[in-house]
Image (cartoon, rainbow, N blue to C red; front, side, top):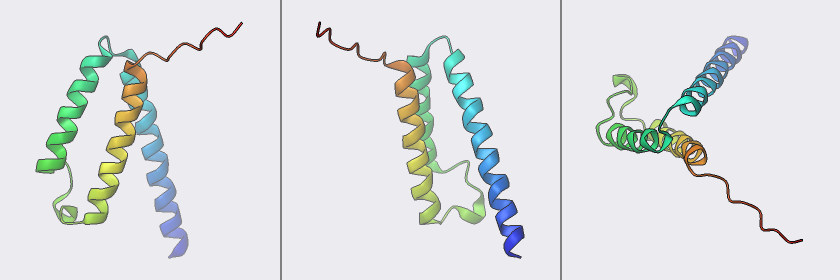
Length: 93
């Protein structure tokens, strides 16, 4: 039984990793990353208030809601990194 759980966890982690890679590729190729960020924030707010994507069996789970918020914030930070150009290092020489 323990190995089955471990195998399922590994499969879920691998799936999540591939999804994050795919999302990064899509975000990097978007012609208007600032518009993408705007739409992402609206979709995230909608999901947090209406919970349309969570399976019905898990909609009352505070743990799932907290993890969803944390992953949403993480993805928002990644999108912000794509939208906001990196600050240039000051020339000290």
